[in-house]
Image 1: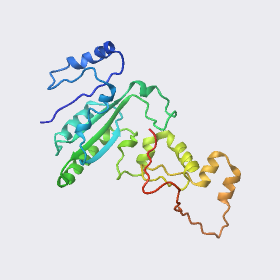
Image 2: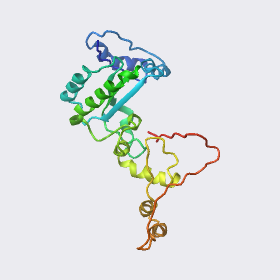
Image 3: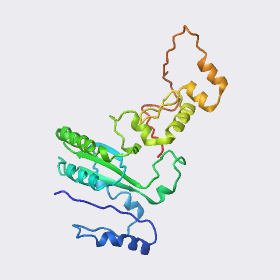
Image 4: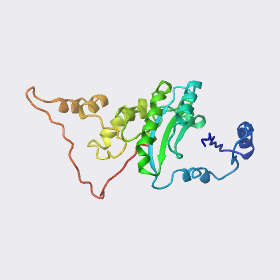
Length: 247
């Protein structure tokens, strides 16, 4: 049996929370209703049981251009074909405090009210992987007409094209590349959804550093230029280092 669940959270005085939740609690006849006061630490862990250790996951995600009847109908039709009882089609509502921050104030640029789509194919048995991954990809493809340009960096998969990282940071991507060129020009921290540093010449030009730009551009017409990333041994760092852009 497939179900629709509404996960809500109101952070504030209890009386205001009860008033805000009342229209949802009055809507329809739920199979189960657990809306009530709880510590914020419990809110942060209430979904952990749905993602057990060792489970296999494949996700596809994108912000919607708008939440239309057509988009909701497509989601319902696609979810009816979900091959795993652990699968989910999620809509995350972006609103409230997150929309009152400027687009360029942080690395996360998605500040307009709207919805983020997440198609999640989760399973325990590796034999189910092919069917689950195919369902996620087919569902995501069916929803393409409803998708916007924004992506959420935490939901990008290993098989995403480089454009996905740029879409996740929007107008901030170039600035983040400049910071990467300054702090990690050799891209040592690359085991992530990688923001590649600007080239030395591009970074110098954009920073208005004419002397450095000339040094990068000082190549004789007959010269052959080879770009090579050197491996560095940094004291105190051993094994794999994972870094995630802040969002």
